[in-house]
Amino acid sequence: MTPSATSDTYRARLTARQETLAQMERRNARIAGVRLILGLTGVGLLVWLGLAPWKTLAALIGLFAIIAVGHGRLINARDRARSAVDFYQRGLARLRHEWAGTGDAGDRFLPAHHLYAVDLDVFGRGSLFELVATCRTEAGRSALAAWMLAPAAPEEILARQEAIRELEPDLDLRENLAVEGDHMRPAIDPALIRQWAVTPRRLPGQAAVEVLVRTAPVAFLASLAWWLQGGPATPFLVVLAVQGLTALGLRHQVLHVTEAVDAASRDLDVFFGTARLLESRSDESQRLVALRAQLVDGQHLASTSIARLSQLVAMLASRRNMLFAPIAGLLMWTTQMAFSIERWREHHGAKVAAWLDAVAEFDALCAVAGYASEHPGHVFPELDSPPSHVRATALAHPLLGDTAVANDVSLGAASPSLLIVSGSNMSGKSTFLRTLGLNVVLAQMGAPVRASSFRLSPMAIGASIRVLDSLLEGHSRFYAEILRLKQIVDLARETGGASLFLLDEVLSGTNSHDRRQGAEGLLRGLIGFGAVGLATTHDLALGDIAAGWSPQASNVHFADEFDGGSLAFDYVLREGPVKTSNALALMRSVGLDVDSA
Image (cartoon, rainbow, N blue to C red; front, side):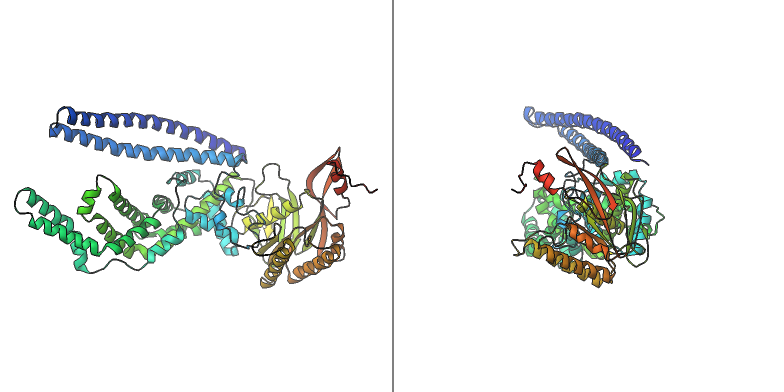
């Protein structure tokens, strides 16, 4: 499907979902009006007649309850229709390249001092994560972030590619995922639910205690009926006392159970819906088959168990209802629900981690499949064996729109291991580094890349592009840079050269002599370990480094043209070092007097 065809499909579906939503809004208004009339009628009968005939009042209450149930279902369907509208509106915004700042930036997943996440815009506003992360669960977003932060093994990359190819055409699946739950509500914390699922039992397991709790409602109702029919109140009061003492004795354990499940159970409906979608599929790719097997054990479905937990949590929450709260207290409702939740956890807690992993990976794969579907011109990379190399044709930045300029790049094997990229400021050097780095990130998480062809060997990434000083840590910009460079050298050493280095304006914070000598030693060491990479500079002297290292190193450059007081760039990568400098002309163009006396 071409980008225009994808856009046409989204617009057609958006129109249909908007029509459905409008119909539901009208039905919702009518039913809300009926409920109001019934409520006012019941109140009027009570006020004007003193007490309405019980049959009439019971009929009104029954009718109100039936309509309320139907109204609740309509509201749920309306919310799903609204989510579907939002899904296609967001999709069209991505296709128009108007998505930056509208999605999940993923800043919470950014580790301190990561070797490329900040430099390559993996997280943050307008980042790779914000573009790709259309996940519905927090577990899925966490899995996707982990994929972006570390390269997968080759066999894992191929397994994800196969699954993504199978999921890519299934737009209905992605819409169904999008309408599960409310995307604005705080999501379930994967680590929290994992911990909750395996926490040791808090409530006592003695049969006598549980029997007392379970029989309390029956005993209470029987005593209440006996008391209403006449007779001494002693049995009734004894039952109340026993129930009260039991609840008081279990109070701290029950409170611990209810607080823990309240914290861990947010977003259960999304978790349930995503699991149910995976269970219902009949995929062929090995990874999707394996994920489904984690949720399906014979005739038992994980979604059934999750739905039961969700029901228990909802029943527990009903204790806060003003009308039900007095009855809940007399029936020891909170204590009973706590025992039920603990029993659920004993039966299923050990399986929760596997269920969560399956749902998380499925959710992340669907997000990447959506990215692939919305970028049909991207290709899945081919994986090669070492030594380290990258070869790409028509490579472009995945976060830029139609304005991105594509270039070819070849590093390692029969090509130079090092490209020294020269050019003036704003000519495209840093963007070129990020272009290569982000596409390698995509390639090694199993996603398609923005190129017409792409081959690479497995490699770790180390970048020094956006290194800043730190007042808190007492580091200057130069000191922070050399610390990062040390990490990149260590990475090349530890991986046996299976690494890609991306160095922007290397050692720009020192004098020309030390810069030349330091850069030469650094780059020679990286190549010596077997690493491949790019180093940018606008210092023409550094271009001489590559001249003596052929064929291991080569010069390339981005050109510019100064005309009529402004700079023009075509962002096309050319062979050889840059031959011109425009800094003085640019300074003069803004009114700075740089002419010597």
